[in-house]
Image 1 (spheres, rainbow, N blue to C red):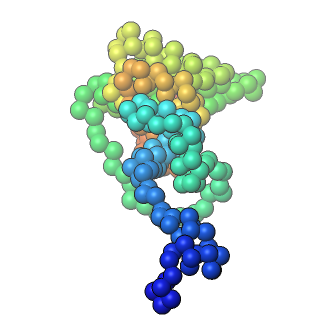
Image 2 (image 1 turned 45 degrees about the vertical axis):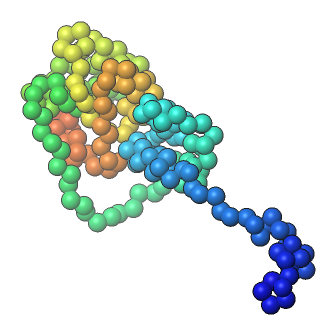
Length: 217
């Protein structure tokens, strides 16, 4: 166009380039903040898929179409994948802040054992981080998310609920039933990092003593 004095239309015609392609300019990325928020939520809730991450966005007041969430979820490659565990270098332990009063933070964890007939059972233990008190141990052959919710509802009537509950990433704790009930009650669920039981150290220690002193007695 500069050397021969041709117009844009004529130059595009001569080299076989559609003028629309020449005029195209990349649109600005409008998903920057939303993309960052989805990555943050996916990092916090590692077991959550796209639909549940979309629900968390709505809870935080981010009204967005589910198709837009799904597109960003795919582009960021956040789909849950099962990977082989690799040996990694030891990392510095995360120091968990201590509670300043009762009912500020609870720990929840399961103990699994079997009776003399060989049938296995599970015990759900809840421990107060401040007082080191165990207000309930729920025992049954099957304890799912709905059962956890009913245990917490019973505790609500006798001592109230804490500000936060710390658990591991087991399917019973990361399931929809506990998540919805905690959200309605204003209780924050804190999930430890996968493979880091030290972040739930007191619950692990309690479970070890409970298993040795009670279930094997």
